[in-house]
Each structure stands twice: as structure tokens, then as C-alpha cells.
Image 1 (tube, one colour):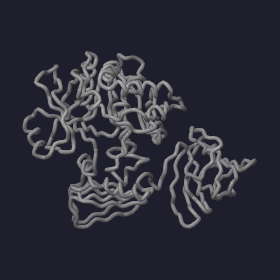
Image 2 (cartoon, rainbow, N blue to C red):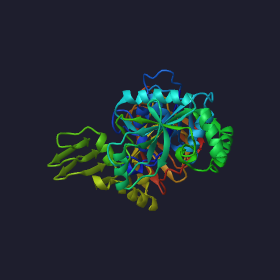
Image 3 (spheres, helix red, strand yellow):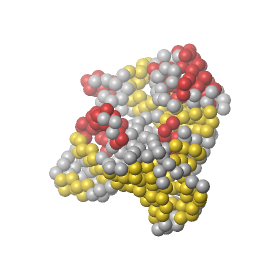
Image 4 (tube, helix red, strand yellow):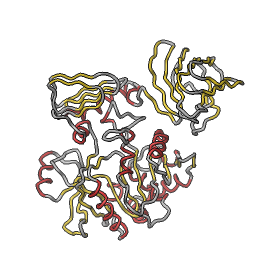
Amino acid sequence: MIPVILSGGSGTRLWPLSRGQYPKQFLPLVSEHTMVQETLLRLSGLTGLNAPIAVCNENHRFMMAEQLLEIGAVPAAIILEPVGKNTAPAVAIAALSAQSEDNVLLVLPADHVIAHIEPFQAAVKQAELLAKQGYLVTFGIVPTHPETGYGYIMKDSERIGNAFKVAAFVEKPDLATAKNYLKSGDYLWNSGMFAFTAGSFLKELEKFNPEMLTICKKALGSAKTDLDFVRLDRAVFSTCPADSIDYAVMEKTDKAAVIPLDAGWNDVGSWSALWDVTEKDASGNAITGDVLTVDTKNSYIFSENKLVTVIGAEDLVVIETKDAVMVAPKNRVQEVKEIVDQLKKQSRPEAQVHRKAYRPWGHYDSVDSGDRHQTKRIVVKPGAKLSLQKHHHRAEHWVVVKGTALVTRGEEQILLTENESTYIPLGTVHRLENPGVIPLEIVEVQSGSYLGEDDIVRFGDNYGRI
């Protein structure tokens, strides 16, 4: 069985913590591990697992690789989507990448919470057996309340062991319909998790959407391998129809089966959902960071950087990051997407990036900026190096705070240690690297007429960036 990790989401409903370039699946929201890591860690102990296949946005490739490395997971492939095309093409590419059509693919979105591992793993084992019999299996969550934010799966009366044939997939209902679904006992929440053999899925996809399969084959056939990544052909993949697994295959096939799953599942699709799955204090508050409260109840309060104080509030969400603050009633957190839409329309960076930006070599934090100047704190991992580059519009001053820096400046190389500095004139080819065994920390002061991140001409790069 091959775990297939789908990591294409942007998580806008968890803004300002989740952003376009650093979405929720790469954040440690409910434990010390990120959601991507938890997705694989909850499979620990299952026998017969092959190396996972991850499918992710091209912009997230280094975060995916690093987070898998942190938990000792060596992927069979990290497949990069140049454009998002929903889940069906992503799974088709993974199926085409499997070593054998007989391999069972366990398709798992990277941003789910599952509280109870034992019943989840039992359901996975059952799904594997059904998949080997030719079924396309989905996991239906036993509903706990009349939820209007999920699609539903109607069970057929025909049983297959502890599973059921699927009678129908239904769209998100209104509240009255959701109450009827819950009362009937015939409906399950659609989790978006699946299990089937690579061959079974591809055969059904060819039957119901042959154009999608043909384009996926072409995109993978002309893909390029770059470090640990498989880069799909952008020109080809861009022409692929965008569709979910449900619409492309599951709603049409007569081989769909559903396994009821009661394992504390949550897709953490909003701040209120995150409050549901987070440990709370005696007043029902879920608190992270430097927070003080007075007469505050049933609230989610997150502080990344500053002291946050809340007085006399109930059912409130308060999120503070280094560059944004969001406050909303818990019953209106779905409207966060409207804020993100406004930020995008205004081309504001807060929609896409944090003040602290991660790179394959480490990270930087933009601590100050103004007219013609910007200050960053840069951390470079041991053995890592930035690209050999130059800038047309800015000069840079570097001061080493911790560790050792090897600086290329034009034709010369300079070794700097703590409290030493150098100056990179405008237009000078330069590179920063860490030859040591501890993280290198420097303060960079930029000065010039334009300080944007796109003022970089790269001459050499270890990470395949253009």
C-alpha cells in the first residue's frame, strides 16, 4: 500500500496564520508536528506500507521535502503541480507513478485531524482488502451533528462486510436537510480520503474522463526530475480538466464502497473547527502563546509575537501574528475568506507570505523597512548556501551575529565570524553560505531605490530556482 499525500490546499480560512505560501498543512496546529507530518505519523505500525508519494504545489516543494525529512519519511516521489487542477488529476499522476497497477493507493489530504488512531488504522486495513477486490473505497465520517459545510455520502442497503456500497454522493445540504440526514442514519460526511488500486482508479478514469487521463500521461511523460522532485510539464498539465475525484470518478462508478469511520475526524476548515480539536482551559478557552484573559470564555486566542490580552469576551477568535491581527466571533470565522479576497485585490503581501519567510537554505524575518531601506534577520542552515546572485537596485550590509559565514563578493571570498561584517555594493555578484555545523545568523541592511524580492539575478543555485 502506498500513501498518497495530497497537499494542494491554500487554507485561506485559517488566515492570518495560514497563507498562500505557507498554508495550514505545513503548520503545527494541533501538536508539535505539522499536519503533513501527522498525516504520515498516524500510519505508524501499519504493515506493508511502501514509501509515500506526495503531490504538492511547486511553491511548497522545499517545505514538503524538509518536513518529511524531519520525521524520517523518504518519499518515493514529490510530484510538483505547476497549476492546481483539483484532486482527480493529482491522484491520476500518483497512480501513474506507482510501481504496479496492483499497488493499493491510500489517498489522504494533508490537512486532516484524526484523534483516535486505532479505529482509523482498522478502517485502513479493511479498505486495503476491499481495494484488492476491485472496489474504489472512500471513508465516510459518522456525523455527530447536522453539518452544512460538508458533502455527504448515502449508504446503500447492500453491505460488504462492515462497509456499504455507495448509493449516492450529495452536495452540502441546508440545515433542515442536514438534520434529516442525521436522523435517518443513512448518510455519512464525505472525508475526501480514498483507497483503491492504481489500476482500478485509472481504468475508471479512462472510462469516465479519458481526456484527463491522456493529459496526465503526457504531463508525467514529459516531466523533469529536479533533485527529489518530479516537475510536471506546465504547458501540458495546464490543459488538463480540473475536477475532484468525486466528480470525475466516484459519483459515476458502480464500484464505489464506503467504510463508516468514527475516529474523531476533523478537516480543520476554520478557526472554530480548530477550537473544537484543541485542548482548553477551565473556561473553555484554547490558548497559544503569551495570552492573559479576564472573564473570557469559549474563545480561541493565538499569540505569535506580542502579549495579547482579552477581557469580557465569549465565543471569540483572536489571532496575532508578526504582521497581522484578526478578531472575529466564532460563528463568523468563515468570513475570513472575504478579508483574504480584499488583501488579494489590493495586492497586499499579507495574503501570501508571512513576515518570516522560509527558503530551502533557511529563513529570513523582515524586522524593519522604510523609504529606501530594509532590515532582515537571516538564518542559514549548516552546509547551506544562497544562490550566486546580484541586484540592480540595492546594496547590502551583512553583520554576523552567530556562526561563521563564507561570503563570495565579486572575485574574492571572505570568512566572517561573530561581530564581523561586510558590504555588498550594488551590482556586485555575491553569495552567502554557512560552512559551519551550527546555524548562521546575520543581520542584513538593504539600501537602494527598490527593495523587492524580485530584484535578483541568479547565476547559480543549488535548489533549481530560476
